[in-house]
Image 1 (cartoon, helix red, strand yellow):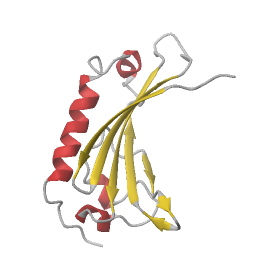
Image 2 (tube, helix red, strand yellow; image 1 turned 60 degrees about the horizontal axis):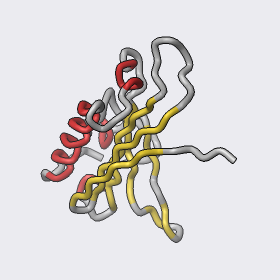
Image 3 (spheres, rainbow, N blue to C red; image 1 turned 90 degrees about the horizontal axis):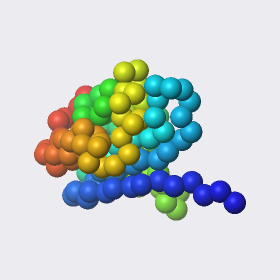
Length: 133
């Protein structure tokens, strides 16, 4: 039996949580390393920015206002007992010209990822901008 491993770092704010993850894959070519980094924000229903979300599209005002690396590449609405508990919004660091991130194996190597996560944390900690619905 083979187990997959994933590293997860979390920072909690009022009515939101920021998560940084790293997992490994087999490298697919010479230029690309095995590491895959992502930053996610769990924005709970009590957070003022939650009301800005409108449907499943990653291309919407609520996501475009967020500090995410090269924009939102992940959006889902986790549920508990049939009710939405949050908007989980994220971005990966595996785009064109992101090869350097695939070679970062530690949190200290990936300081840019954590810097982005800190900026997203600060953004969600401030009063969110009002959006047109």
